[in-house]
Amino acid sequence: MKIPAMIAAELRRLTATRMSVIALLALMLVPVLYGGVYLWANQDPYGNFSEVPVGLVNLDEGTGAGADATVYGDRVTDQLVDSGAFDWKTLTPDEAATALANGDIDFVVTLPADFSAALSSAAGDTPHQATIGLQTNDANNYLASTIGTQAVEKIRRSVAELVGQEAASRLLTALSDIRGKLAEATDGATTLADGAGRLADGSAQLQTGTAALAQGAGTLSSGAAQVADGAAQVADGTATLDGYADRAGAAGQQVVDALPQARDDIAALLAQQGLDQATIDAVLARLDPVGDAARTANARLQAAVGQVDQLAAGAAQVSAGAAQVSSGASALTDGANQAASGAASLAAGAAQVKDGSAQLRDGLAQGVAAIPDTDAATRDAQAKTISDPVAVDSSALTSAGDYGAGLAPFFAALAGWIGIYALFLIVKPISRRAVTALRSPIRVTIAGWLTPALLGAVGMVALFGVLSLALGFAFANPLGTLGILMFASFTYAAIILALNVWLGSVGQFVGLILMVLQLVTAGGTFPWQTLPAPLAWLHHVLPMGYVVDAMRQLMYGGDLARVGADVAVLLTWLVGALALAAIGVTRMTHRRTLRDLQPSLIG
Image (cartoon, rainbow, N blue to C red):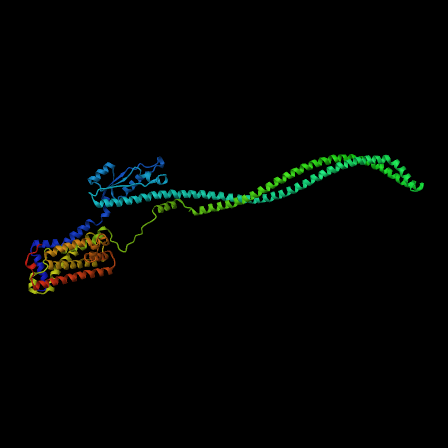
């Protein structure tokens, strides 16, 4: 009997009756029912969150009054309800507690009474965080609690962004106002600097003038003192002159009065000198005009004495005035020196004012330049950027598309194992008749393997049709994906065949254990790196993880080189399992064991 004949014989046995056909079809459809229905139910659960009932309790009392009132709770409530992310139901605290306990809602989000006050507290003396309450009930659904935690975190980020944007907007507006005031101050500082410059120039000129004034006042004081001394001397001299003049006047009068006697005395004296009378007369004749002149001079002298008296009186007045001038000039000198000293201090201070005002002007100008000159639209954009500074620019080498497509490789691989496992419930692993008649272990093994492998492959084709047509999953490499599913079915059939050949019905139970182990180690949901160390080791050994990886690469358009490595591992399992099954069949063709003679404990 050849291999096709053995396969045909097994198929005739499986389809001998109507119930056999129904059973065979039902078992072949197990992968479709398991993989298709499960993935259909979980195709896009995140897209249906809008149907999840969630309670929202808004107790926020707000802050301020009238036009200044701020109620963040109402704004958050409106945003949540309008978003449609969940089926939000606004409730009172009592209503929410009852609904959560009864399972009418999955979780409750509460905005407390001081929500707005806390959000606005950063500008006050007692800043503190606002609180968003989350109440869950794991008795309703544990994943709903997890989803609620994620939802509240999104709400927290959204509120933080809202408040941050408003705070940043106020800050930027204040900076814009400050910039305007600084610009005005810069203009004033520029004017001040200009005035300070002129003040410095004027104070320098004043310093020069007051120095010259002090010098001139000193000279004046010195001259006035000299004048006063000279005037005093003049006064003394004129007083002495006046005395002399009076004595001269008296003497002149005496001379005039003594002229006749003096003429006689001269004549006598000349005579005594031995002069003759003619000579004496000649001399006297010459002296007579002198007498006349003396008399004339005396008259003039008497007039001059009167004038000298007047001069002496005037000189005394001049001396007194010069003394006063000298005293005033001395005081002027002291004042001029003080003015010069003050002018020097003023000049130094004016220079400092000039430098300081220039520094003030330059500093204000730098401050104005350091603050951006923005309009309202730019400030709004800046506030949004400050409140939410980081955006995620996500890219993907490959993309599953949705949650169901993400799970498809895992559940398709698992459905293939379940389908083969179910087929071995009715398919005879090894034909006892063929073992007895042929004594060809390889042909018997291949025939025992191909029957469930082909039937399982048909189930995989049906499952692929459901995934691609009914559920609409996209496949980057559809033929490759179908091929890996069919190859996985062939590999699974070889493994379970070997288990049945060596262990009989117990092998079927071991196949169930292997399914459970691969269910948790294949890395179909969470990354396999999150597994405990022993289970992570099994991930690298058992075949289902490689089926999942290969299907992901083919379905999402990943690395085909990885597919080759996965196929190599599956091929190793396939060849190894068939070789092990052939060894078991060889053993069966040569001898019988006690297990062959006794009924199995299972089945």
